[in-house]
Length: 109
Image (cartoon, rainbow, N blue to C red):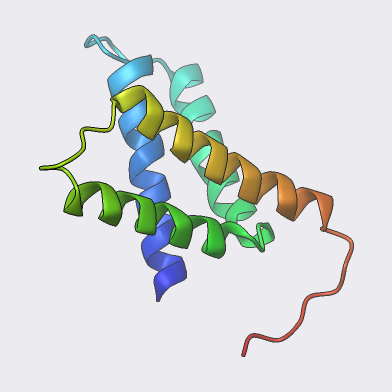
């Protein structure tokens, strides 16, 4: 269940980046752009199962966000540091999964 929650969160993050940064202004979507966007989302859905360290990475991010929320009245963490932490943890999880891709998986406990 946590894997699905992490996956849904990751998809929402990508959607927010797509809508908030890439497509900020309204425009008519052409067929080519729709196919590229669809291919990207299908690729994300297919690739997420290959990242064996995504679940620990998402657990670390959840702990970071929870700690940040609990301490928000005491410490203000700048947005840049939060984004850097997200990119570093997710990038590290993906990189670690890629580097250890040839090793056999153990059954979950």
